[in-house]
Structure formats: structure tokens, C-alpha cells
Amino acid sequence: MPNRPPEPSLRQQALWVTGLLDSPPEPSFDRLTDLVRMILDVPVALVSLIDRDRQFFKSQQGLPEPWCSLRQTPLSHSFCQHVVDQAEPLVVPDAREHPLVQDNLAIEDLSVVAYLGVPLATPDNVVIGSLCAIAPEPRQWTERDLATLEALAESVMTEIAVRYHLEQRNAAAAELEATSASLRLLNQDLESRVAERTEEVQGLANALTMAEQEERRRIGHVLHDDLQQVLHGVQMMLAVGDHHRASELVEHASRLTRTLAHELTPPVLHEGTLGELVGWLADQQKDVYGLEVEVDVEDGIPQVDEAVRVLLYGVLREFLFNVVKHAGAHRVLLTVEAAAAAGVRIVVADDGVGFDPLAARRAGGIGLAGARDRIRLVGGCLDITSAPGAGTRVSIEVPASPGLSGGSAAGP
Image 1 (cartoon, rainbow, N blue to C red):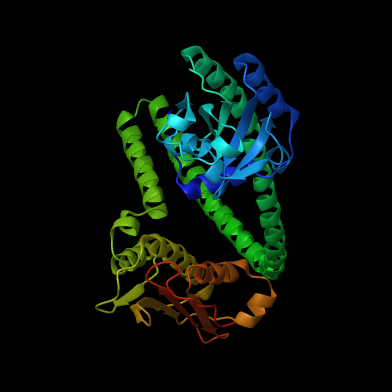
Image 2: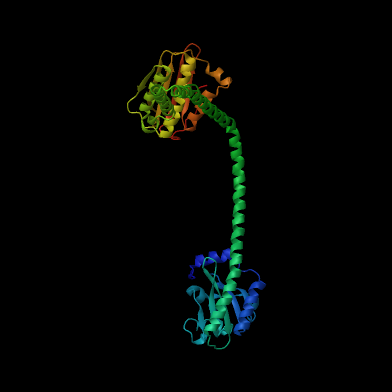
């Protein structure tokens, strides 16, 4: 990639990254300027870096005092600034007759008459200075002189690149340390907050694990007690040659499998509305468990995000299963209505035996706690009202999309 003339601010940034400005002399640079003097047979050779209003000599050989000790000149004495500005070599046989530099003060003060300079660039091709050869009398520079100086400039740029990358690594390390210190403070704060929530999250994890295990046991029961018996019957029918009965049993096994898959992820769960979902769930409870669930869906309820529908499906199915298993209810009413902040409220009420929610919590019932935590994770809240002999009322309020409101769990 060709070198490009830098904007002053870009050059300043590149110079800053190298760390070379105002740095002490280094043998690795001095050896190269010494080679320029010997090979090109000139009295003065410089590695010049162009700052805003001066040129700084990272290396110099042959300059008179006070410039030798100062290691810099103002730009009024600089030929190298033109190499940087043009990003190309500058060949000056006689500065006194060259229109670009004939008024430069270096002719008088530094005895610069013949000048040959080539660009020095950073690894990302920003020109920051020049490697130059200077003579106090006119000289016709040859193509070989220029090629020699450009070859030595490659070695200078290698030295620049080493420092460039080193400074970048040092800056990155310092930034990383500062970031790490900030992160340590943040981490301490987060650890404090996490510690406050650990018990709650662990309870949710336990609830989810137990719910998953319960589902697996139920599936295993279907596969083992129902499907396996049917398949065993198929084997027996085939053994006695009753292919018609075997075919009927295979069809029965197929229906069992479809029913199980349909119950786990019914199409309406992902494709239908919330009203259609609770309607399907009510029908499924009647078909599977004989539980009559009356559904009342208010008109105009907001469209509910699929993730919220999936959550509600799991929670409602769990509550309805508990009604079947524990409540001994004769009547169940499931209502769906709009709630505040574009949310939805679902109420499940039964006339069953009821229970003491506070006692259930003290007993460590994970189903209730897990449901409450899952609802809270999407910004919703769950309230349970029940008493022995008085039935149970479960109210669930959720946003239409996860996290749209900051609800918190309510109730015992």
C-alpha cells in the first residue's frame, strides 16, 4: 500500500503512538544514519520526525552545534517537512536554486545545499518523518543513491514499527488495567447483588428441574405403561397371524404418539392467539382428565408474544393438573382479560378443597414457587388466594411481551 500524506492531527497521533518524539538517541537508529553517511559519502544524515512546529532528530550524524545538542530545529529550517507533506522522495541537487526550498533558513544556518530525503512511515502507512542525506555543496544525486537511501529507510521503518507496536501494547495494557480495576469494582457490586438473588434463582432452577423431571416421568409412564403394552400386543397378534388386530394396535400406538407430541407442543401454542390456546387447553383437560373448564375470553385482549404464550401454557397446564390431582373440584372457571400497561390477566378459579398458601410455602412446595418465579422473570406477577374448604383462585398478570413491565410477585 502506498504511503499517504497525513493530516496534521493524524500525524500527531501516529507520532504519539510511536513514543519516539523527544526520546533519547538509540544505537539502532544511529547505526543506520552512520551507514547513510558512509555509503553515500555525505557529512550529515538525519532521521527527522515532523511535529506541529518543529522537526525532531531521532538520530543525527554530522550536525554542527547547537543543533547537534538540541536535536531539533524549527520548521523554518526543515527540508524534511516537504517529504512528509508530499509523501514522496525529495531530490535537491542545489537548494539555492530549488524553488521549493531556496528560501529555507537551513541553507544558511546548517549549510544545507544538496539534499536527498525519503519518507518514513508507521506500519499503517502514515508518513511521520524522513531519512535524509545532506551535503554542503551541490551534488547530482543518482538513481543508485536514491535506491540506497530507500533501502536503508526500510530498516529505519522496521525500528519504528517495533516501537509502534510496543507502545500500542503498552497503551492497551494500561487501558486493560484501568478497565480491569473498574470491572473489579463493578464485579464486587454485582457479586453483592447476585448474592441477594442466589437463593431465589436456585429455587427457580430447582423448580424447573423438578417440573422437567415430572414431565419426563409422565412421558415415561405413557411410553412404558401404554405404548409398550400396545407394542407387546402387536407382537402377540403377529405371532398368531392376526394381522388385522395387529394393524389396529399399530394405529392405536400411532394415536398415542401423536397425542403425546400434540400435548407437549400443540400447534396453537406457536400459531394461535392466547384465547385459542386457553380454549385448546380446556378441551385437552376434558379429553384427558374429564375436567370441565369453563373459558371466558374478553374481547380486545392484546396480542401476546409467543414466549409469553409458551410460559403461560406451562404454568396454566401445571395449575389445571393440580386441580385434577389435588383439588377435587366440580367447577373450574378460566377467564382472560386485558390488564394495565398493555398486559393480560388470567384468572383460574375452582370450587375444590383449597389449601393454605402460607403453609405450602413453608413446606417448600416448588411448583408454586417455580411458577411465581417464572412469571416474575417476564415482568409479571402471580397472586394466589385460597383457604381449606374455600377453593382456590389464581391470578396471573403478564405483559404482552417479556420485560415490558416491571411486575413483581404478589401473594404469599
